[in-house]
Length: 182
Image (cartoon, rainbow, N blue to C red; front, side):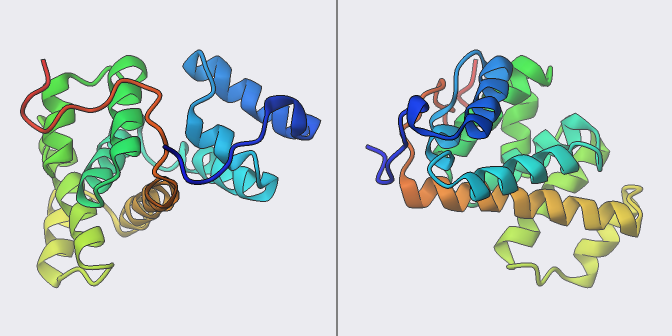
């Protein structure tokens, strides 16, 4: 059971309802994370603005790969469910590629390097090695793109932390353990 209270839809300001309506149009419902964030409109705005801004820094599959790798490394079941769903249903990723991303890899060698690097960022708390940087550069990423990768990883950590603190009720199909997806 979620540990933080989500306000009733009618109890939030109009601009927050507008944001929730946009999220609902994307998913077909308002996921519990966003409903909970509505209790603090400034935090909801930060998350939405960050997601919107980061949609422009890397292609969608790369961002999905990073979110899956980070959420797995950070043990966020809610984010794994949401990112698995979004990656599959909206991002066109196969269940095999979703599993690989969660494991720090990909069917695409360039995205595999991103997944490994994103997990290293999380596991080392940002203190990646020279070899880690060389590997992601060797896959073809520039320094500005590496900054984008780290920023997308941190955005995933933000929502991981929120959902781990909240123990957000999973309201989307739960992610299967790696290697068991159909």
